[in-house]
Amino acid sequence: MTVMNLINELRHINGKEPLINWNQVLNDHCLSHTLAMINSGEVDHAHKDYLQDYGEIVWRCNFMNTWDETFRYLIFELIGKSEEHKKILLESQELGYGIMSDQGKIYITIRGK
Picture 1 (tube, rainbow, N blue to C red):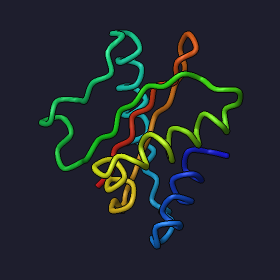
Picture 2: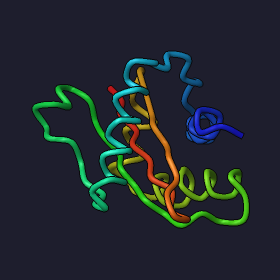
Picture 3: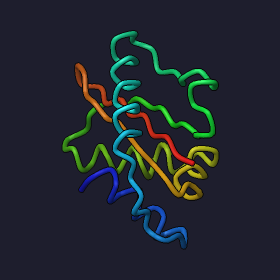
Picture 4: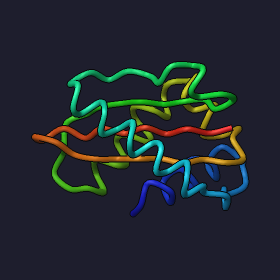
C-alpha cells in the first residue's frame, strides 16, 4: 500500500473524492525537505515564505513491523487524528509528499493546497 493510496482511503472514508493530481515537482520538494530534517535531526516546517500557499505536514515516527503498518499508522493514527493536518489531506486538490527512513525512524513531509 502506498502513501497515495492511504491518503485516498482516508479521503474516501471522509466522503471526499480520491485525489488524482499528485504533483511530481512538489514530491521532489517534499523529499528534499524530508532529507533536510533527517540531516538536521529536527522535525520542523519549511519557512512560510517558501511554502507560499501550501499547507505542510511534517512528522517522524518509529518504523513498525512492516512498511504497510507504518504508513497506515502515520496516515490514520498520527496525521489523520490531527484536525489541522487531516484538513490538508481532505481539502487539498493538489498534494505531494516525500518519505524517507533513517536509523529506524520514518520521516514524512506532505504539502497540499
